[in-house]
Length: 100
Ligand SMILES: [Zn+2]
Image 1: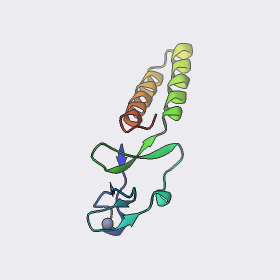
Image 2: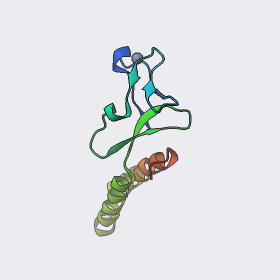
Image 3: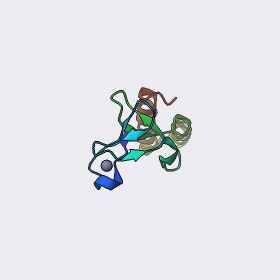
Image 4: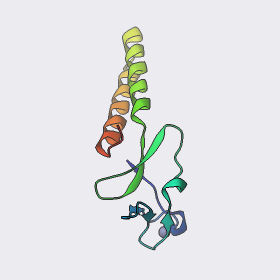
């Protein structure tokens, strides 16, 4: 998981989830769930310790694995295997924080 840091703290702190499902950094800066900005195929998530971050959406990882498998099968290109392995790791990261 890639942690989301607090811009008001110059990126030096992370957000933790509160019981009301908002997020707050140690300095008290709040972040509403609707204001969490993620890129492309990423999803926001909270790990077991309550820290806010992002993971690659599992469906995107599975597509990457399938594409890499096709390339590997067709060409034997080692980089395709490496891409599939990286996509597997991204998928497991998402799975561990409940995004699956
Ligand atoms: Zn802050």
